[in-house]
Structure formats: structure tokens, C-alpha cells
Length: 405
Image 1 (cartoon, rainbow, N blue to C red):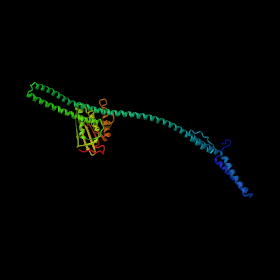
Image 2: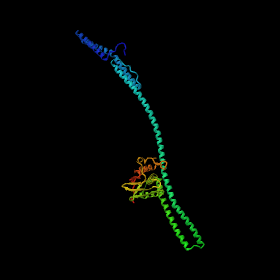
Image 3: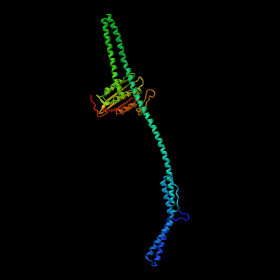
Image 4: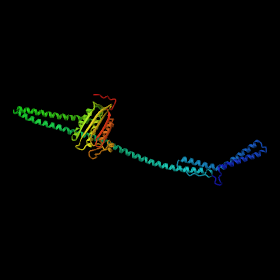
């Protein structure tokens, strides 16, 4: 760019060039009066055009040089893809264009720097989030494993309590039977000794026979009672420890479960009864039903009543189309309204440190909704007991045929 003389504007350069061309044409017309021939007129025309072009080129060169430098600057920025260099702002009417370009490039550089900084910060945060997610995933896996272990432990504890109760209940008839057999054995030895010595009279023989019959009846009734308990507990225990899917009579099976729970209720003042409408055969998981009923009863005993308080537990069973409905009720103290929404949450209990693990109702919810493919609703008011309404399909697999009767 020339620095020795003032730079004319692009409009002024074009105007001067135009005036030079017009002047050349006027000279040509004046000369034409000399009656020049065609080659001379053509030469004068070309000379005037060349003069105008040369004048415009000389005067506009600084402007085109400035535009070329701006274009080179943009090309260099595009190739470098980095912070733009400073722009040589031209003078004249292109000054505003140069200043605008310079401001634009400066703003671009600032935004680029901010973008790079933001990108680096984002990458750092993403890496931190990835590490946190990995740690959370590992913690979640550990918590899930711990929860599954606790749920399994709670199930086994429930089964263990059932075993202890049934074992205690069986001890009574077995103990009576042992006493009866021991008494009969002593009586037989005494009668045999008198018989061998010829001292056994008719009256003593009749007494022995009557006494033996009484002992046999007592022994038979108590052994039958123990056999019933063992039979009920055997099926219930097998079902609770396995996840077998089978067809069974719902009323008969739930009666066995009730019978196996009788030792748990024996030390209380609670009464219980069950109503089953018609003959209901289902194709589902009996072990899940056993665990559900066991946990409901144990929850009532633990949370619904004070020690020695009288009460009533009730189970109503009916079939509604392809679904079975179980309605369990107790008339205990009920549940506070602020706790109703937390009953099925794991580890929630109002008796922490007093025998409550907070997993019983959580297990009930998971068994009903997960294994039985059913639904469960709980209704309660303080002082009015609890009602648990459970619905599940009678045939968990529609393709399987259920025998009626």
C-alpha cells in the first residue's frame, strides 16, 4: 500500500478515469474534423480507452491491494484454524470494512478460546461423571446383592420360625405318647410277673385291659395329631424352599398353611378362620402363597397386637373369573396414615430393634407382583386393623389346562 500520497476513494478513482476517457473521446472528435481515415480513428479510440483504464488502475490500486490483504488474512485464518492475526486496516472507504473484519476476527478468537476452555471443562466433568457412575454402579450392585441376601435370610428365618413352632407343637403329642407307652410298659411288666407267679386275678386282668385300651386311644390320638402337623408342615416347608410351579387345590393347601401356623398363634389370644368359596384349583406357585400368608400372619402378630391382647385373623378366598382374590384382615391397631405409603418399602419398620426387620411386607409385595403375577392393595386406619387384598391369575400360563374337581 502506497504511503506517499493521499489515497483517493474508489468512487473518485472511477470518476477520474471516466473523465479521462471522455476527454480522450472529445479530443478524438475534435481531431475527426481533420477528416482522418478509419485506422486513425480506431487508433485514437483505443488510445482513449487505454488512457482511461490506466488512470483507473493507478488510482484504484491501493484499494484492491487492501482487499487482497483482507482476503489473504481470511485464507490464513481458515488454514491455521487458530487465533487470528491482527488485521492491517486500510484507509479510505474500506476502513469500515477492515475495522468490522478486525472486530469480527477478535470476537471469533474470543469465542474460540471460550469454546475450547468450555470443551476441556466439559470433558473433565464427563470423565468425573463417568468415574462417579462406575462407583455408583458398583455400590448399587453391592447393595442389591446385600438386599437379596437379606431377603433370602428373612425367608429362611420365617421358615426357621415355622420349623421351631411346629417342632414345639409336635413335642406335646409325642411327649404324651412317650408317657403313655412308658406307663403301658411298666404295667405290662407287672402283669406278666403276676401271671407267671399265678397271682393274676380276673379283676386285675380286666383293669389291665381297660387301662391298655385307654393308653392306646390316647397314644393314637396324639400320634395322629403329630402326623397331621408333620404332613402339613412337610408340604408347606417344601413349597417355601422351592419355586415349583404346579396345580393344586387352593382351599386344601391354604388350610394346610393355616394349620402349620397354629403353633405361632398358640401362645397368643388370637383366633383365626378361613372361608373358601367353592372348589378352587389353580396352576401357580404354592410356595409363594405360603410365604405370603405366613408373612401376613407374622406381621399381624408382631405389629397388630400387644402381648396377650385378643384379636381375630380372617382369610377370605374366592374366584372371580380367571382370577383368584385373597382378602386377609386383622382387627389390630392398624397403620398410621403417614406410614401407609412405606409399608412395602424394603427395611421400613416401626419396630426397629424390637424384632422387626422391615422385609416381611416387601417380600409379600415382590412375591405377589413378581412371582404370582398379581396385584396387592393395603387399606388401614388407626385402631381399625388392616385389610390386604390380593388378586392373581388362577392359571399363570393360559396354555396349561386346569382340572376342575
